[in-house]
Image 1 (cartoon, one colour):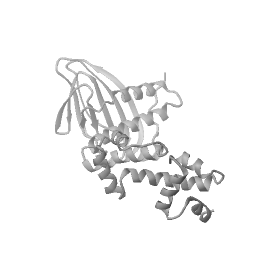
Image 2: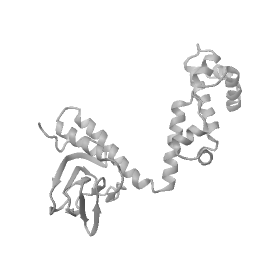
Image 3: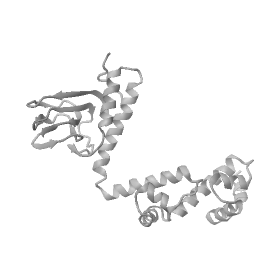
Image 4: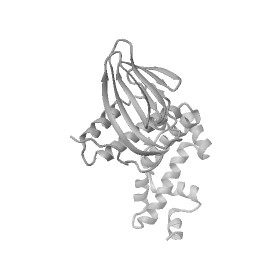
Length: 262
């Protein structure tokens, strides 16, 4: 079974190419020192690992992830009385790019990604490059998010977008403040404050705007549909309620809007 090495798989910077992936088991008393030639991410499967990167030292346990940049001096060693096993992924990247990934990340729950990347790397099938790219970029996103989530402004923005994305997909359904609260992880009151702060309107008004926007598109793209059909498509309970909200939002009735934008 052939291995795949050094293919320029990602094309866009800052990640320029996948290098290698693998799995190792080391006995107690093992120690390894070198200068990293490319960025490497390790995931401890079992045991403890002593890590020294330049002048900083860490102790890593099962599930911990270690990120080593290229050209850093690194020492890995077993720690304690248990054998050590770990997965690794290495890649080329821009020298000065800051990934915002900690040297050691705890609780990332990403061991399954390392296992899958290692499996596809060994397979040598034509589609494995695409699958490795997908899994690897998902891993990078998880590790970056761990660091960014410490920033409250980032967290608020990220959770607000999850509610907005849900509305954009499910606008025609009945969406309650409680449902958006469940999606975002914030209370209805706090989520309302975030919507007003970012969009100038509360969530329920945001949903009505989305329904009206979709009604506008349908009026022009499917002129054969009547108002009852459009109301049903975009989630209004009746054509009269559609006309009421539509006129409030646009200053004209749906039919007037249709005539003006033929």
